[in-house]
Length: 78
Image 1 (cartoon, helix red, strand yellow):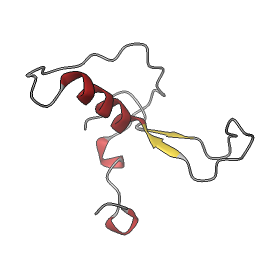
Image 2 (tube, rainbow, N blue to C red):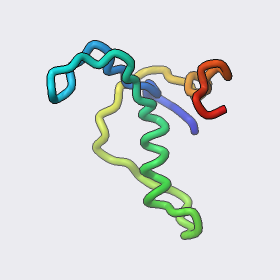
Image 3 (cartoon, rainbow, N blue to C red):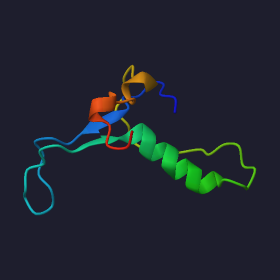
Image 4 (cartoon, rainbow, N blue to C red):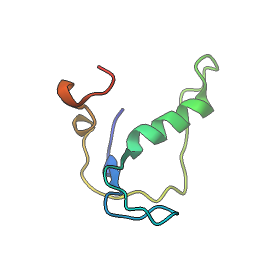
């Protein structure tokens, strides 16, 4: 996964969900989510080499793909 011109994470900590509960640990890797959505469009065996995502309002910044890789001690799926 590459990240260019956007922050790879969106942090929801401290915000409230639809039931009014405060979110304490919710951070979403939007770079991974976009990649997953693109995979659904391209398919594994359909020979579609690219997917175009339009209209997503992302947080601009100097994000790097290296931020996505977790330390082994923090990884739930090593």
